[in-house]
Length: 127
Image (tube, rainbow, N blue to C red):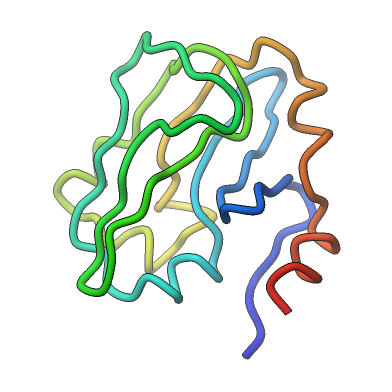
């Protein structure tokens, strides 16, 4: 099976992605991760203003098959949370790189994102 892996993002081995837009990093989970989870039924996310540390847990995603922790691709302050997911968690399945985004972080250090897996490296990991 082929999965969507956009080149404009960086990836954690735990299947989260980060996309930098002038120091604000939008975060979500990958197409592979949502496929492995199955139908997402619940997402627990941090609050705006919370401080996150790279590769530490920031939330939980629950599907009909499993409950998984979510990990931050960068350190920084949460500046936005996708509240649409609270009422429609299936957006993560439908559009993991678009409407299914989870949060935005004001990154402390943009180099943290660059140190993560490229699209090609992530693709090798899930192959």
